Length: 122
Ligand code: FES
Image (cartoon, rainbow, N blue to C red):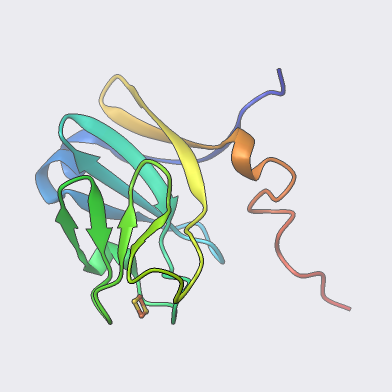
């Protein structure tokens, strides 16, 4: 099993209080969410037009984008509605360690890590 690649950490209490927290990790910030006693992490920038999902709101086990109200499932990053109008959000592993939520690159995005996805400058 490949070693985990940590993206960052946020205080668990902040995630529990706010529900949605943006973990700054330019250029791909991560949304850390609290839903039904679990933590989740998905790409923050909505792949429809780039709004920050951390500015949106929770709806059951989904996050609703604040710009056009597209709905993404937190566990899978999949677009729930409207169907077919944009892609899914990249997901990350999120685990509670003590009083923090630790976000790691997961098996689904291994090979497209945050750092390796940055375009090379020449
Ligand atoms: S920018 Fe998120 S739904 Fe359009």
